[in-house]
Image (cartoon, rainbow, N blue to C red; front, side, top):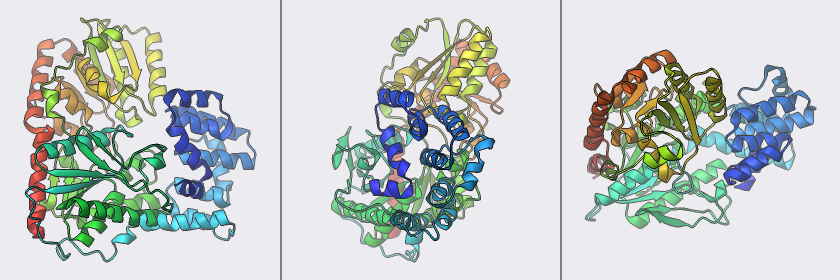
Length: 565
């Protein structure tokens, strides 16, 4: 994998290494480093705005060679957006391998290949071959000639007493803690509790390629078996070669456990590996679209006309069409999938859910409030979230400032690219004289997030409208509802779907004034908070637990097996 990083960009390996350092070491590296390393260190420690400022400042006085190193480091971290206009000429003047790094970071694979034309050095040859493999994977070349769901040969139905499933995912707990990995753990644990023999398969090289060098080839977490192909001693540094190895890994595990279904989860690389394995074994494939990779990339500044966006969207659509069944997380996502030409009869919705125990466990937010110096009589409005710009947390801060209430605390739990800017905004609001208090905790252990949910009286999701947020629902408000907390959300389709008519309030747009008005109503009316919270909890209990989801998945599996028989 190190060879792969070096082929793409010599700074890519540095970026991977910096990301797996402990938080304290990341901050120290950011404080002490200079030049290209300082850009990488700041980004790895979550200070993405600082990384942008450092890049802009360093470029202003840099010569051509140093500028190329700075831009290559920025490309490795995805920091090319937001570069000051005065320095953008460096990107236009860059040629050769550096130009290829930058073009690839911008999603222009064709431009990256063109930049290497005429170069004969060994590094350029390796880079050319890597880009050819990347192009092959992004365009779904491995799917060419693959049998369709209706024409493909299927094996005879299993005679086992219970259904066996292999889940194919990008990453997993415990190395990666995110909504994606929490969903995997929750749904597979519930499936196993329901009698489904469910297993999880990650890509070859995970998590060693991400810097977790001591990882075991398999692990069981709370009853869920995770199978890893650590790719020891194998050359999988080319994307197309890695995809083929991935398909072999999935097929081997499916064969070993007698899988009746292969269930892939976003992104399309997982779906391609699952489809290749499934067709070879005659096993039906379910593809779960948890998000749309191309739109996430576009939200972060990617160009919708780029190779990456166009090819990824086309290949995602192709995988959705080839799967025997599709699962999505919301009705708005389902509508998007159907609009791509997928048979609506094959598209199912299984929304974000919570463990059944969250409805019965006593989760006390009191110790968290005490530790944060929040009084029992204070009213806490807040959120638990990754701090991305599209989450609109700045709107929540501004709304809290407008409420100007000494009893009010705005609590923001989490970390992310926007944290530095949000911290500055909270300080500005304090200096403005508002009596509202602002508490930003930073990252907390996953095991303690529910305690922080319980410390909040009104949970807020002030998301901005983007291609992603208009389709993909977040998990955190479902957890808040399970704990009986009313939610206030912006008027986006998946959030309206979650809140319904009586489980919270919907605000038109990410507007601080409108949000402050809605929050003010709930701050002043504890009885209404209780009614909305109780209604939300009842909704989660009846429709949003993993045991309910396991039953829904069971029906999907029965359908695809019946068609395959």
